[in-house]
Image (cartoon, rainbow, N blue to C red):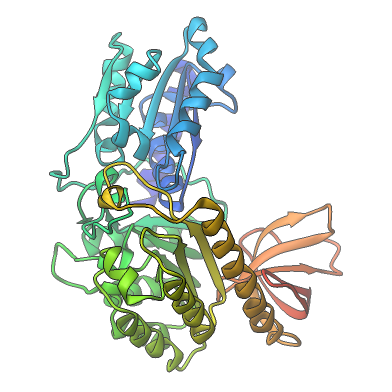
Amino acid sequence: MFTGFRVRCARDILDFVMATGKTFYLETFGCQMNAHDSEKVIGTLQQQGYRQVESEEEADLIFYNTCSIRDKAEQKVFHRLNDYKKLYQAGKRFGVLGCVAQQEGEKIFERAPFVSLVSGSASYRKLPEMLTRLESGETRITGLDDRQTEETFETEFMARQNPYRGYITIIEGCDKFCSYCVVPYTRGKERSRTSSSILAEARSIADMGYTEIQLLGQNVNSYRDPEGKMSFADLLANVGQVGGIRRVRFTTSHPRDFTRDIVDAIDAVPTLCDHVHLPVQSGSSRVLKLMAREYTREWYMERISWMKAAKRQISISTDIIVGFPGETADDFIQTMDLLAEVQYDCVFGFKYSARPNTPALTMIDSIPEAEKAHRLHVLLERQKEIQRSNYAKHLGQIMEVMVEAMNPARGQIAGRSSQNKPVNFTTTLPISPAPGSYVKVKIIGTFPNSLVGEMV
Protein backbone atom coordinates (compact mmCIF):
# COMPACT_ATOMS: atom_id res chain seq x y z
CA MET A 1 0.00 0.00 0.00
CA PHE A 2 1.63 3.24 -1.11
CA THR A 3 0.00 6.49 -0.07
CA GLY A 4 1.19 8.49 -3.08
CA PHE A 5 -0.07 5.82 -5.43
CA ARG A 6 -3.41 5.85 -3.65
CA VAL A 7 -3.78 9.63 -3.99
CA ARG A 8 -2.92 9.62 -7.68
CA CYS A 9 -5.27 6.73 -8.29
CA ALA A 10 -8.07 8.48 -6.39
CA ARG A 11 -7.68 11.63 -8.51
CA ASP A 12 -7.53 9.64 -11.74
CA ILE A 13 -10.60 7.63 -10.74
CA LEU A 14 -12.54 10.77 -9.80
CA ASP A 15 -11.76 12.39 -13.18
CA PHE A 16 -12.73 9.19 -14.98
CA VAL A 17 -15.96 8.77 -13.00
CA MET A 18 -17.09 12.34 -13.64
CA ALA A 19 -16.40 11.86 -17.35
CA THR A 20 -18.35 8.60 -17.74
CA GLY A 21 -21.48 9.67 -15.85
CA LYS A 22 -22.33 6.11 -14.71
CA THR A 23 -24.03 6.18 -11.29
CA PHE A 24 -24.81 3.66 -8.56
CA TYR A 25 -26.68 3.48 -5.27
CA LEU A 26 -25.75 0.93 -2.58
CA GLU A 27 -27.70 0.12 0.58
CA THR A 28 -26.19 -2.10 3.26
CA PHE A 29 -28.06 -4.40 5.64
CA GLY A 30 -26.49 -6.15 8.62
CA CYS A 31 -23.21 -6.34 10.44
CA GLN A 32 -19.87 -4.51 10.44
CA MET A 33 -18.49 -7.11 8.05
CA ASN A 34 -21.20 -6.17 5.56
CA ALA A 35 -20.54 -2.47 6.08
CA HIS A 36 -16.84 -2.97 5.42
CA ASP A 37 -17.58 -5.19 2.41
CA SER A 38 -19.63 -2.29 1.06
CA GLU A 39 -16.62 0.01 1.43
CA LYS A 40 -14.69 -2.39 -0.81
CA VAL A 41 -17.57 -2.71 -3.28
CA ILE A 42 -17.94 1.07 -3.50
CA GLY A 43 -14.21 1.45 -4.14
CA THR A 44 -14.36 -1.22 -6.85
CA LEU A 45 -17.38 0.42 -8.52
CA GLN A 46 -15.66 3.80 -8.49
CA GLN A 47 -12.54 2.25 -10.01
CA GLN A 48 -14.79 0.88 -12.77
CA GLY A 49 -16.06 4.37 -13.56
CA TYR A 50 -19.21 4.60 -11.45
CA ARG A 51 -20.18 7.55 -9.26
CA GLN A 52 -22.07 6.99 -5.99
CA VAL A 53 -25.40 8.84 -5.56
CA GLU A 54 -27.73 9.31 -2.59
CA SER A 55 -30.95 7.67 -3.82
CA GLU A 56 -32.26 4.87 -6.01
CA GLU A 57 -33.97 7.40 -8.28
CA GLU A 58 -30.64 9.02 -9.21
CA ALA A 59 -28.82 5.77 -9.93
CA ASP A 60 -28.27 3.75 -13.08
CA LEU A 61 -27.29 0.71 -11.02
CA ILE A 62 -28.90 -0.18 -7.67
CA PHE A 63 -27.23 -2.61 -5.24
CA TYR A 64 -28.49 -4.10 -1.98
CA ASN A 65 -25.78 -5.70 0.19
CA THR A 66 -27.73 -8.15 2.31
CA CYS A 67 -27.55 -10.09 5.58
CA SER A 68 -29.35 -13.35 6.39
CA ILE A 69 -28.26 -13.97 9.97
CA ARG A 70 -31.71 -13.22 11.41
CA ASP A 71 -35.18 -14.53 10.63
CA LYS A 72 -37.06 -13.02 7.68
CA ALA A 73 -33.97 -11.19 6.40
CA GLU A 74 -34.64 -12.37 2.85
CA GLN A 75 -38.26 -11.14 3.07
CA LYS A 76 -36.99 -7.68 3.95
CA VAL A 77 -34.77 -7.72 0.86
CA PHE A 78 -37.57 -8.82 -1.45
CA HIS A 79 -39.89 -6.19 0.04
CA ARG A 80 -37.28 -3.54 -0.67
CA LEU A 81 -36.84 -4.81 -4.22
CA ASN A 82 -40.59 -4.79 -4.73
CA ASP A 83 -40.82 -1.21 -3.47
CA TYR A 84 -38.47 -0.06 -6.21
CA LYS A 85 -39.24 -2.44 -9.09
CA LYS A 86 -41.06 0.44 -10.82
CA LEU A 87 -37.63 1.96 -11.39
CA TYR A 88 -36.82 -1.00 -13.65
CA GLN A 89 -39.21 0.48 -16.17
CA ALA A 90 -37.04 3.61 -16.14
CA GLY A 91 -34.00 1.64 -17.22
CA LYS A 92 -32.47 0.99 -13.80
CA ARG A 93 -30.45 -2.20 -13.21
CA PHE A 94 -30.55 -4.09 -9.91
CA GLY A 95 -28.02 -6.26 -8.11
CA VAL A 96 -28.31 -8.26 -4.88
CA LEU A 97 -25.09 -8.85 -2.98
CA GLY A 98 -24.06 -10.60 0.22
CA CYS A 99 -25.52 -13.38 2.32
CA VAL A 100 -29.08 -13.44 0.98
CA ALA A 101 -27.64 -13.50 -2.54
CA GLN A 102 -25.50 -16.54 -1.71
CA GLN A 103 -28.33 -18.21 0.22
CA GLU A 104 -31.08 -17.73 -2.37
CA GLY A 105 -28.91 -17.85 -5.50
CA GLU A 106 -30.75 -17.95 -8.82
CA LYS A 107 -34.12 -18.13 -7.01
CA ILE A 108 -33.77 -14.35 -6.72
CA PHE A 109 -34.18 -14.06 -10.50
CA GLU A 110 -37.43 -16.05 -10.24
CA ARG A 111 -38.87 -13.91 -7.43
CA ALA A 112 -37.53 -10.61 -8.78
CA PRO A 113 -37.04 -10.96 -12.57
CA PHE A 114 -35.82 -7.37 -12.87
CA VAL A 115 -32.65 -8.22 -10.88
CA SER A 116 -29.67 -8.59 -13.21
CA LEU A 117 -26.83 -9.53 -10.86
CA VAL A 118 -26.60 -11.83 -7.83
CA SER A 119 -23.30 -12.21 -5.98
CA GLY A 120 -22.24 -13.68 -2.65
CA SER A 121 -19.45 -12.01 -0.69
CA ALA A 122 -16.91 -14.70 -1.59
CA SER A 123 -17.24 -13.63 -5.26
CA TYR A 124 -16.71 -9.88 -4.85
CA ARG A 125 -13.23 -10.23 -6.33
CA LYS A 126 -15.04 -10.95 -9.64
CA LEU A 127 -17.06 -7.72 -9.55
CA PRO A 128 -15.12 -5.93 -12.32
CA GLU A 129 -15.76 -8.86 -14.66
CA MET A 130 -19.45 -9.02 -13.66
CA LEU A 131 -19.86 -5.27 -14.22
CA THR A 132 -18.40 -5.61 -17.72
CA ARG A 133 -20.90 -8.34 -18.50
CA LEU A 134 -23.72 -6.22 -17.09
CA GLU A 135 -22.74 -3.28 -19.28
CA SER A 136 -22.67 -5.52 -22.35
CA GLY A 137 -26.35 -6.34 -21.84
CA GLU A 138 -26.41 -9.60 -19.87
CA THR A 139 -29.42 -9.83 -17.57
CA ARG A 140 -28.70 -12.85 -15.34
CA ILE A 141 -25.20 -12.70 -13.91
CA THR A 142 -24.27 -14.76 -10.86
CA GLY A 143 -21.25 -14.82 -8.59
CA LEU A 144 -21.82 -17.77 -6.25
CA ASP A 145 -19.23 -19.94 -4.48
CA ASP A 146 -19.46 -23.50 -3.14
CA ARG A 147 -17.02 -23.14 -0.21
CA GLN A 148 -14.10 -24.09 -2.44
CA THR A 149 -12.49 -20.70 -2.95
CA GLU A 150 -9.22 -19.93 -1.18
CA GLU A 151 -9.27 -16.24 -2.14
CA THR A 152 -10.17 -13.22 -0.04
CA PHE A 153 -11.52 -9.91 -1.28
CA GLU A 154 -8.62 -7.47 -1.15
CA THR A 155 -8.69 -4.28 -3.18
CA GLU A 156 -6.56 -1.16 -3.45
CA PHE A 157 -9.69 0.82 -4.24
CA MET A 158 -11.27 1.20 -0.81
CA ALA A 159 -13.91 3.88 -0.24
CA ARG A 160 -13.81 4.16 3.54
CA GLN A 161 -17.11 5.54 4.83
CA ASN A 162 -16.39 5.77 8.56
CA PRO A 163 -14.77 9.12 9.44
CA TYR A 164 -12.95 7.91 12.55
CA ARG A 165 -12.49 4.12 12.42
CA GLY A 166 -10.67 2.04 9.81
CA TYR A 167 -11.88 -1.54 9.34
CA ILE A 168 -9.64 -4.40 8.20
CA THR A 169 -11.01 -7.84 7.37
CA ILE A 170 -8.34 -10.37 8.40
CA ILE A 171 -10.33 -13.59 7.89
CA GLU A 172 -13.40 -14.39 5.82
CA GLY A 173 -15.83 -17.30 6.09
CA CYS A 174 -16.56 -19.82 8.83
CA ASP A 175 -15.77 -23.51 9.43
CA LYS A 176 -17.57 -23.86 12.77
CA PHE A 177 -20.99 -25.08 11.54
CA CYS A 178 -22.98 -24.26 14.66
CA SER A 179 -26.33 -25.99 14.19
CA TYR A 180 -28.38 -22.76 14.16
CA CYS A 181 -26.10 -20.60 11.97
CA VAL A 182 -26.30 -19.88 8.26
CA VAL A 183 -22.93 -18.09 7.99
CA PRO A 184 -20.82 -21.11 6.86
CA TYR A 185 -23.22 -21.55 3.94
CA THR A 186 -23.30 -17.89 2.90
CA ARG A 187 -19.74 -16.72 3.61
CA GLY A 188 -17.75 -19.75 2.52
CA LYS A 189 -14.92 -21.50 4.33
CA GLU A 190 -12.38 -19.76 6.54
CA ARG A 191 -9.75 -17.90 4.50
CA SER A 192 -7.11 -15.77 6.23
CA ARG A 193 -5.10 -12.95 4.71
CA THR A 194 -1.34 -12.80 5.12
CA SER A 195 -0.04 -10.89 8.12
CA SER A 196 2.12 -8.83 5.74
CA SER A 197 -0.90 -7.57 3.78
CA ILE A 198 -2.82 -6.81 6.99
CA LEU A 199 0.03 -4.80 8.49
CA ALA A 200 0.53 -2.96 5.20
CA GLU A 201 -3.16 -1.97 5.25
CA ALA A 202 -2.89 -0.94 8.91
CA ARG A 203 0.04 1.36 8.07
CA SER A 204 -1.90 2.76 5.12
CA ILE A 205 -4.89 3.47 7.37
CA ALA A 206 -2.61 5.28 9.82
CA ASP A 207 -1.12 7.30 6.94
CA MET A 208 -4.66 8.38 6.00
CA GLY A 209 -5.10 9.88 9.48
CA TYR A 210 -7.12 7.17 11.21
CA THR A 211 -6.17 6.45 14.82
CA GLU A 212 -8.53 3.53 15.48
CA ILE A 213 -8.51 0.18 13.68
CA GLN A 214 -11.03 -2.62 14.04
CA LEU A 215 -10.02 -6.10 12.87
CA LEU A 216 -12.95 -8.08 11.47
CA GLY A 217 -13.84 -11.70 10.85
CA GLN A 218 -16.80 -14.02 11.30
CA ASN A 219 -14.49 -15.69 13.83
CA VAL A 220 -11.70 -13.14 13.99
CA ASN A 221 -9.54 -15.09 16.45
CA SER A 222 -9.63 -18.18 14.22
CA TYR A 223 -7.07 -16.33 12.11
CA ARG A 224 -4.29 -18.49 10.66
CA ASP A 225 -1.45 -16.62 8.96
CA PRO A 226 -0.82 -18.17 5.49
CA GLU A 227 2.79 -16.97 5.84
CA GLY A 228 3.15 -18.77 9.16
CA LYS A 229 4.67 -15.69 10.79
CA MET A 230 2.11 -14.68 13.40
CA SER A 231 -0.56 -16.02 15.70
CA PHE A 232 -3.71 -13.94 16.15
CA ALA A 233 -2.28 -12.53 19.40
CA ASP A 234 0.99 -11.64 17.59
CA LEU A 235 -0.99 -9.90 14.86
CA LEU A 236 -2.96 -7.91 17.44
CA ALA A 237 0.25 -6.75 19.11
CA ASN A 238 1.86 -5.76 15.80
CA VAL A 239 -1.18 -3.79 14.61
CA GLY A 240 -1.23 -2.08 18.00
CA GLN A 241 2.35 -0.96 17.48
CA VAL A 242 1.74 0.75 14.12
CA GLY A 243 2.73 4.40 14.40
CA GLY A 244 -0.21 6.78 14.83
CA ILE A 245 -2.69 4.09 15.94
CA ARG A 246 -4.17 4.71 19.38
CA ARG A 247 -6.88 2.05 19.56
CA VAL A 248 -7.24 -1.46 18.12
CA ARG A 249 -10.49 -3.44 18.43
CA PHE A 250 -11.41 -6.89 17.12
CA THR A 251 -14.68 -8.76 16.59
CA THR A 252 -16.12 -11.36 16.71
CA SER A 253 -14.19 -13.95 18.74
CA HIS A 254 -15.15 -17.61 19.09
CA PRO A 255 -14.57 -19.35 22.45
CA ARG A 256 -13.05 -22.42 20.77
CA ASP A 257 -10.14 -20.33 19.45
CA PHE A 258 -9.83 -17.88 22.34
CA THR A 259 -6.36 -18.41 23.80
CA ARG A 260 -4.65 -17.03 26.89
CA ASP A 261 -2.06 -15.15 24.81
CA ILE A 262 -4.84 -12.85 23.54
CA VAL A 263 -5.35 -11.65 27.11
CA ASP A 264 -1.57 -11.37 27.55
CA ALA A 265 -1.41 -9.15 24.43
CA ILE A 266 -4.17 -6.86 25.77
CA ASP A 267 -2.22 -6.54 29.02
CA ALA A 268 1.07 -5.84 27.25
CA VAL A 269 0.02 -3.44 24.46
CA PRO A 270 -1.85 -0.31 25.70
CA THR A 271 -3.33 0.46 22.27
CA LEU A 272 -5.31 -2.82 22.30
CA CYS A 273 -8.72 -1.92 23.68
CA ASP A 274 -9.70 -3.49 26.98
CA HIS A 275 -12.89 -5.03 25.58
CA VAL A 276 -13.64 -8.55 24.32
CA HIS A 277 -16.87 -9.71 22.67
CA LEU A 278 -17.08 -13.46 23.36
CA PRO A 279 -20.44 -15.01 22.39
CA VAL A 280 -21.57 -17.78 24.76
CA GLN A 281 -25.07 -18.39 23.25
CA SER A 282 -26.19 -20.51 26.24
CA GLY A 283 -25.19 -21.19 29.84
CA SER A 284 -26.17 -24.86 29.55
CA SER A 285 -23.56 -27.37 28.36
CA ARG A 286 -26.40 -29.59 27.16
CA VAL A 287 -27.79 -26.85 24.92
CA LEU A 288 -24.29 -25.90 23.76
CA LYS A 289 -23.89 -29.50 22.57
CA LEU A 290 -27.20 -29.27 20.68
CA MET A 291 -25.94 -26.02 19.15
CA ALA A 292 -22.70 -27.80 18.05
CA ARG A 293 -20.65 -25.08 19.71
CA GLU A 294 -18.03 -27.71 20.68
CA TYR A 295 -17.24 -26.27 24.09
CA THR A 296 -18.82 -26.60 27.52
CA ARG A 297 -19.87 -24.02 30.05
CA GLU A 298 -16.71 -24.88 32.02
CA TRP A 299 -14.49 -24.32 28.96
CA TYR A 300 -16.09 -20.94 28.38
CA MET A 301 -15.80 -19.89 32.02
CA GLU A 302 -12.09 -20.73 32.02
CA ARG A 303 -11.61 -18.09 29.31
CA ILE A 304 -13.66 -15.64 31.34
CA SER A 305 -11.37 -16.34 34.32
CA TRP A 306 -8.32 -15.40 32.21
CA MET A 307 -9.87 -12.01 31.46
CA LYS A 308 -11.00 -11.46 35.06
CA ALA A 309 -7.40 -12.12 36.20
CA ALA A 310 -5.86 -9.66 33.69
CA LYS A 311 -3.89 -6.65 34.88
CA ARG A 312 -6.25 -4.36 32.96
CA GLN A 313 -9.98 -4.39 33.65
CA ILE A 314 -11.35 -6.01 30.49
CA SER A 315 -14.95 -5.26 29.59
CA ILE A 316 -16.76 -8.38 28.35
CA SER A 317 -19.83 -8.56 26.10
CA THR A 318 -21.62 -11.55 24.61
CA ASP A 319 -24.43 -12.96 22.44
CA ILE A 320 -27.14 -15.22 23.90
CA ILE A 321 -29.88 -17.18 22.12
CA VAL A 322 -32.96 -18.15 24.13
CA GLY A 323 -35.58 -20.72 23.15
CA PHE A 324 -33.27 -23.00 21.17
CA PRO A 325 -35.02 -26.30 20.30
CA GLY A 326 -34.92 -28.49 23.40
CA GLU A 327 -34.01 -25.69 25.83
CA THR A 328 -35.72 -26.56 29.12
CA ALA A 329 -36.63 -24.24 31.96
CA ASP A 330 -33.59 -25.57 33.83
CA ASP A 331 -31.33 -24.83 30.84
CA PHE A 332 -32.60 -21.26 30.83
CA ILE A 333 -31.94 -20.96 34.58
CA GLN A 334 -28.34 -22.03 33.90
CA THR A 335 -28.03 -19.21 31.37
CA MET A 336 -29.37 -16.74 33.93
CA ASP A 337 -26.88 -18.08 36.47
CA LEU A 338 -24.04 -17.58 34.00
CA LEU A 339 -25.22 -14.00 33.46
CA ALA A 340 -24.92 -13.36 37.20
CA GLU A 341 -21.52 -15.06 37.40
CA VAL A 342 -19.85 -13.24 34.50
CA GLN A 343 -21.43 -9.81 35.04
CA TYR A 344 -21.27 -8.78 31.37
CA ASP A 345 -21.10 -5.13 30.39
CA CYS A 346 -23.34 -5.79 27.40
CA VAL A 347 -25.50 -8.66 26.14
CA PHE A 348 -27.06 -9.02 22.70
CA GLY A 349 -30.00 -11.34 23.27
CA PHE A 350 -32.07 -13.06 20.57
CA LYS A 351 -34.95 -15.49 20.27
CA TYR A 352 -34.04 -18.59 18.30
CA SER A 353 -35.26 -18.50 14.71
CA ALA A 354 -34.78 -21.25 12.14
CA ARG A 355 -32.41 -20.42 9.29
CA PRO A 356 -32.22 -22.10 5.86
CA ASN A 357 -29.82 -25.04 5.36
CA THR A 358 -28.94 -25.31 9.06
CA PRO A 359 -28.99 -28.63 11.00
CA ALA A 360 -31.30 -27.11 13.63
CA LEU A 361 -34.07 -27.17 11.03
CA THR A 362 -34.43 -30.91 11.68
CA MET A 363 -34.92 -30.35 15.42
CA ILE A 364 -38.39 -30.02 16.85
CA ASP A 365 -38.88 -26.36 17.78
CA SER A 366 -41.40 -27.03 20.53
CA ILE A 367 -40.97 -23.82 22.52
CA PRO A 368 -43.87 -21.42 21.83
CA GLU A 369 -42.99 -17.95 20.58
CA ALA A 370 -44.64 -16.45 23.66
CA GLU A 371 -42.30 -18.44 25.92
CA LYS A 372 -39.27 -17.42 23.84
CA ALA A 373 -40.34 -13.79 24.16
CA HIS A 374 -40.82 -14.21 27.93
CA ARG A 375 -37.36 -15.72 28.39
CA LEU A 376 -35.76 -12.98 26.33
CA HIS A 377 -37.56 -10.31 28.38
CA VAL A 378 -36.41 -11.89 31.67
CA LEU A 379 -32.84 -12.15 30.38
CA LEU A 380 -32.64 -8.55 29.16
CA GLU A 381 -34.25 -7.12 32.31
CA ARG A 382 -31.75 -8.94 34.50
CA GLN A 383 -28.90 -7.79 32.27
CA LYS A 384 -30.15 -4.22 32.51
CA GLU A 385 -29.75 -4.36 36.28
CA ILE A 386 -26.25 -5.82 35.96
CA GLN A 387 -25.26 -3.07 33.56
CA ARG A 388 -26.81 -0.43 35.79
CA SER A 389 -24.54 -1.64 38.61
CA ASN A 390 -21.45 -2.01 36.37
CA TYR A 391 -21.81 1.43 34.82
CA ALA A 392 -22.40 3.09 38.20
CA LYS A 393 -18.84 2.09 39.18
CA HIS A 394 -17.55 4.68 36.69
CA LEU A 395 -19.09 7.64 38.54
CA GLY A 396 -16.43 10.24 39.25
CA GLN A 397 -13.87 8.62 36.97
CA ILE A 398 -12.04 10.55 34.25
CA MET A 399 -11.74 8.50 31.08
CA GLU A 400 -10.43 9.02 27.57
CA VAL A 401 -13.23 9.19 25.02
CA MET A 402 -12.97 9.15 21.26
CA VAL A 403 -15.51 11.54 19.72
CA GLU A 404 -17.88 9.91 17.23
CA ALA A 405 -20.73 12.36 16.56
CA MET A 406 -22.77 15.33 17.73
CA ASN A 407 -26.25 15.13 19.21
CA PRO A 408 -27.60 18.68 18.73
CA ALA A 409 -31.07 17.75 20.03
CA ARG A 410 -29.60 16.96 23.44
CA GLY A 411 -26.71 19.38 23.26
CA GLN A 412 -24.31 16.51 23.76
CA ILE A 413 -21.30 14.98 22.06
CA ALA A 414 -21.33 11.21 21.55
CA GLY A 415 -18.19 9.14 21.98
CA ARG A 416 -16.88 5.79 23.13
CA SER A 417 -14.44 4.62 25.77
CA SER A 418 -11.67 2.11 25.22
CA GLN A 419 -13.99 -0.45 26.84
CA ASN A 420 -16.51 0.23 24.05
CA LYS A 421 -18.95 1.96 26.40
CA PRO A 422 -20.97 4.84 24.90
CA VAL A 423 -20.26 8.19 26.56
CA ASN A 424 -22.47 11.26 26.00
CA PHE A 425 -20.90 14.45 27.30
CA THR A 426 -21.00 18.23 27.20
CA THR A 427 -18.28 20.82 26.82
CA THR A 428 -17.91 24.51 27.65
CA LEU A 429 -15.57 25.07 24.71
CA PRO A 430 -16.93 27.35 21.95
CA ILE A 431 -16.00 24.76 19.31
CA SER A 432 -16.85 21.10 19.86
CA PRO A 433 -14.11 18.49 19.37
CA ALA A 434 -14.13 16.86 15.93
CA PRO A 435 -15.08 13.22 15.29
CA GLY A 436 -12.02 11.05 15.71
CA SER A 437 -10.41 13.28 18.35
CA TYR A 438 -9.69 12.15 21.90
CA VAL A 439 -10.79 14.05 25.00
CA LYS A 440 -10.86 13.54 28.75
CA VAL A 441 -14.34 13.25 30.23
CA LYS A 442 -15.43 13.14 33.86
CA ILE A 443 -18.35 10.76 34.39
CA ILE A 444 -21.19 12.46 36.29
CA GLY A 445 -24.12 10.17 35.48
CA THR A 446 -24.90 6.65 34.30
CA PHE A 447 -27.61 4.70 32.52
CA PRO A 448 -27.75 0.93 31.85
CA ASN A 449 -26.42 1.43 28.32
CA SER A 450 -24.37 4.62 28.48
CA LEU A 451 -22.34 7.03 30.57
CA VAL A 452 -22.88 10.78 30.94
CA GLY A 453 -20.04 13.20 31.48
CA GLU A 454 -18.43 16.61 31.22
CA MET A 455 -15.32 17.28 29.17
CA VAL A 456 -12.36 18.34 31.36
